[in-house]
Image (cartoon, rainbow over all chains, first blue to last red; front, side, top):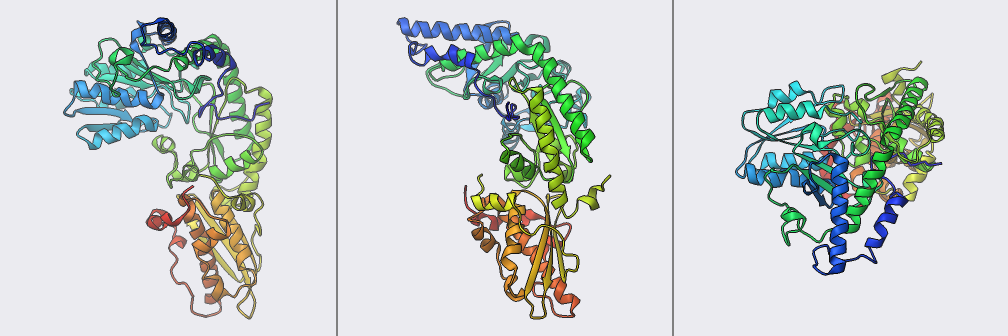
Length: 391
Length: 154
């Protein structure tokens, strides 16, 4: 029985991953850059992890993988490290309106510091369309960053198509693939992207570990300078245990990927159809096209997301909401607004994200728990019947 | 951002939820775009004393908790004293509110002021508070942002 339904926020470390990591905290503690034996042992283990990780994402060679402190650092490096080489004095860059903040904040900062930023909006189907990207591209566009799948609504973009359009004008293409890794087919070679960001803790690996795929030949000036580790692209003594954990976590995800995709898709569809069928004025935020199997995004009209979250928390359940109040800001989720969800509706968003330990019984119980909570909150609202009516 | 135990108590067990059928004053504030709406109904006796109050709120934990405690605070108070309850008083009664949630307590005190003025106007008397910004459907909660810094940084 697991009441944790926020796997898109983070996941528990898999015990098999912990087992693989453990010796590298104590017994094999060496610095991977030292020449003597315990250093060499750490180096070989690190490079073995890099080779396995590279194979898992379809990289042509292990040296195209740079281990980082997480997805956020990988996203930051993708922008700053490449732009400092290919457009040090500014230039045109493109991203989408529903990126993770680790991309959007960087792009917006650059937009205020010498770069020209175009932000392409996803459509109501939750996806960035190649036509819309094409419309903002210019002959001198330097960098395009579009996420592979969205963390709040689970929509998967046709990155292959988007990358082709961006490459046609000579732009470097980056994708934030943090949510996709290990859950759906993702191959840097097939998609033909130049850079991709990943995070270990979203796939039952350790927190504080990420990776940037950097296609061979892509100009790069390291974001973090120092001792020249990671082939002079990311300084700092490597987190050997972390890299090993990340590689092992990815292998486990890939071994189970197809069966988990099938299993979780069924649970997602069951959750969405039962809740939208049994609760009035409730919709799936998106319910068609390529989607992550584990995210069930809901818009429950006439309730405020944080209230739902707190009431669920009282009963031990963990979920996320894109409501304004939960974030401490007054604006609801930028993702929901970007795909055209009205503010009034966006306040009642709920993101249920499932994972390895989620069972059908968990989903069945969650449905029975959520329905009375929604009904209670709607009964407390002064405007529910006025705004949404009732069956 | 963490709520105090008292906020959670009022959120989980809100006092005085509902609508008084024969209310003497009604106040409704907030708007659906900002996500918080509060409606309060009050009974007032011939000595201007609030004898009963009920509320309905659409909003976050803090919005519900502040509404709940305001209905408790005003019972037995004269309307002239009740409208003096500030958002700071409400937050203090709840053992503090996170800084980002201070605007929620404005909603509760504003709702009360509108309800009291509604009562006074019905009796041909001068309103005590006059125009309440959050009673305007186009109310912009951002306008009050500077004041929010007096919340607790948690």
